[in-house]
Image 1 (tube, rainbow, N blue to C red):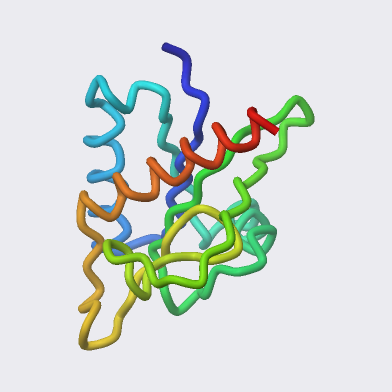
Image 2 (image 1 turned 180 degrees about the horizontal axis):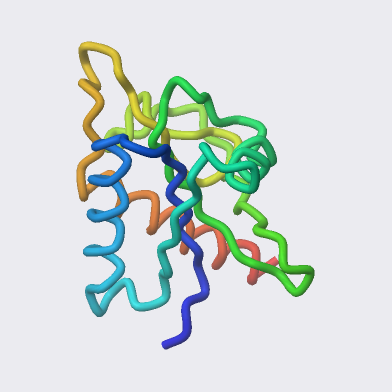
Length: 138
């Protein structure tokens, strides 16, 4: 199956948590049920990476690493998937959830402890799929 979802991990050089999120996202995307997800990495320490990071408009540089789902369109640009509106906190993602686009960023509070689990990554992948289904049916 060709990848229909792009999972973009935003990180920076020398960041162990960034490496861990990238590894976990890759491991999950290699499972047969996630064959439609392709993972790529954007280093915000590069000029190109910083531009892509800024294009997301809702990521906090103090909360890297971050994960955003979207698609590369015919224009060659990455287009994040808009998040469906929700007034209810996500029980899996908690304070890591992005509300503007489908994705997450690291919660460094005492509750979040800077941990992004495989279940959180899977929840973001599923949100991306659900948002695509909704967009296709309208």
